Image 1 (cartoon, rainbow, N blue to C red):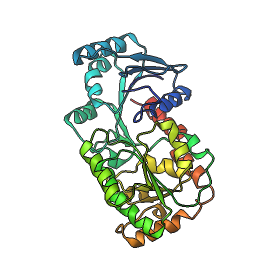
Image 2 (tube, rainbow, N blue to C red):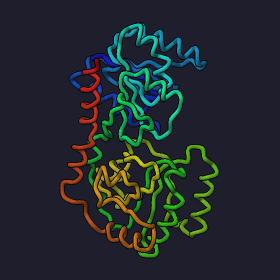
Image 3 (tube, one colour):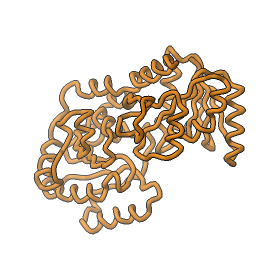
Image 4 (cartoon, rainbow, N blue to C red):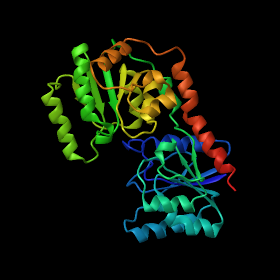
Length: 335
């Protein structure tokens, strides 16, 4: 099977899409895949052995479409795999139809759009991580889970004392960071030695970023809350290994891959998202108020070790190798 992949970035240092480089390497290694052609839009991209990577450098929308059409027409491929950009399913559909090929969209986000609905109609299949992560109900949509590189479960833990708390991801209202800070203040009343690291950026939401800083100052948490900014994906395993508890108060409603990464990295997880219970087990889910009882529970959890073999089991279920195998098997059987 020959793949043509459209992605926004092929750059492992990209703070949002850096993980996709690992996907491409895993696609390249799969026995069903004989060739991969990649089109990206970054100002620069990495060289990956065995991949034919092209940069679409033009800026105008029509010029970009013309360049993409030219590349699609001149390349040998069987399946077009479009990553997170439904508009390119629409733009490339005439070439897919002309060449009588297949097209797959990967999309995992709660927001819908006209472009997404059209892409869903035009694509042969749509793949997503969880049912909640795709806002359109369609017989073309298949839930295939997350794919986390196996090395997340292999990195050596840095011994801790149960006081090191962590959150990774966007500093956004949907992630409930201000509520997390208020809850962490309660945790500090139970465990005065607790510290919290927030790894992520506000992605341009200056008002919410200001609210976060004001909350830290109002609660007097300046000495124990550390904002380290967004980090690249290949640095996150070390971050998980250096912390004891992962806090997750996201209101997205879908199983967040950072929760899986945290467990694979050896962190105890405290999540208020019901999807965590469904995907990983009730022991990591809190279905109650973020009150003193919750604070006492999480401080007690922080002192425990993860069950023996849990990291390996999570890696087997959500590992990148198994994930790519599911993708490739489905694409190879497209009719």
